[in-house]
Amino acid sequence: MKSIMLSDSDLIRLYLDGDESALKTLILRHEQKIFTYILSSVKSRELAEDLFQDTFIKVINTLRAGAYKDEGKFAQWVMRIANNLKIDYFRKAQRLPAYESNGDFDIFDTLSIEDPSVEQKMIQEQVYSDIQDLLHYLPEEQREVLEMRIYQDISFKEIAELTKVSINTALGRMRYALINLRKMIEEKNVVLS
Image (cartoon, rainbow, N blue to C red; front, side, top):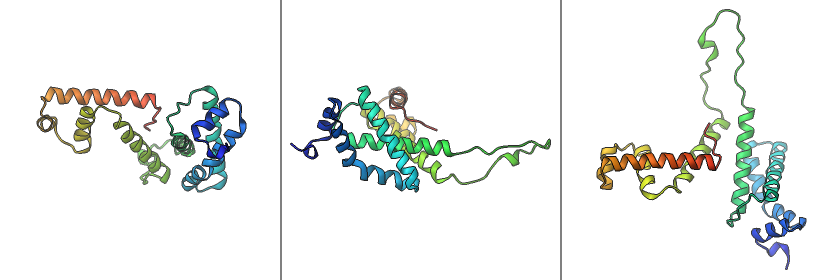
């Protein structure tokens, strides 16, 4: 059977059993999609190639360490690694303005009134997206209360009435939603700043 016909999971197993060509097939299978995704954000072919290479180095290290959990979503997992590496790159590339003192201090000299950069917007959008994704893992009643309070700005009294529970129950659900969300953020290494 040709390796092209094998699933990503089969190729991963073959690679872990010592078949280097299985890894090559995996990379070739997803190369275009991942490289294009990286290039669309960084706009530099050289940088995109570096980030693509770093992505697969991380993939190989994770596979060799036995830390990859095969859920049939290899491509999404690799895209997530690529995305995180892009965000890391943009964070490192940002520089804080240097302040040189000449004795006369004026706070307005240190403040800059600029719109967020494209990279800052991209990072912020990714953080929001990551949190939105994590909300789906919350129990339904916790997610419902959190979404009503945060996204719809509904008071706890109104939430209690709408969900037909006491105010204390609504508050408790919100508290547990936030606790569970924090745990998931730590477990999935979501960077919030």
